[in-house]
Length: 208
Length: 107
Image (tube, rainbow over all chains, first blue to last red; front, side, top):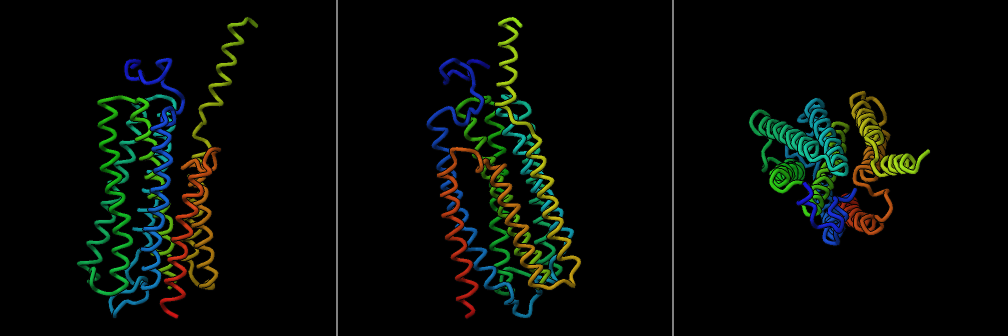
């Protein structure tokens, strides 16, 4: 392993390898700037949805459409996956590469589970409920907001999967560690956006 | 106590300081579950004043987001002033967009 840690002065991987190099620290800081931009992006989609959520054009309303159980399962899956990516970063800080890879794999699997549930949900809306992208302003705003979040989950699944491959190939180094840390930040942010989605889209839709 | 022992104890103390355990993250997880359950239960129960339910939902969501960003994304750790400014900037613009859409479009 020591050969892969050659970047540090004493040849040992530091406690927080993601912050060991200036490049790593810059990566983490600039990723926060990116997440600030993501907050704006999702904010505008939430704004559109909130403005149009009652314009149902005689199509299905939120109250008719949504089921508590699907939303609850999706919420639970994503929340657990956020916790497993915390454990991944903790394993990284202890330099346990195998545990790190396993936690990342569990995170990816839970992400895939969330995506499967969302695909099932959207398919049900389109086929059984006749709730398509062009049904109403509400349906367009709904699919754009929730679909955009789903696309973020899909991208995260792809990203973390590639990172797992890189961890197999290159091990944990001061180069790979910032990538893991930043991907965990991204995954937490996706979970944070989902908290607002299940609150504003699904639960608020049930209240009326 | 020999010098080596002392060194060992010192290392153990340093070790435990450096590696935070999973406890507080599990507490955040359980808290998130509880906040989510309260939100779902408030809506499922119905009957309650709708305005109160909406307010309750938003408060539960905001608490959950703050706790997760503070502990899971480490925003409460020191050296995170710039990230907090970035996120507050993002949330400010997002909030402006939402308030504009809600109170201007349908005015």
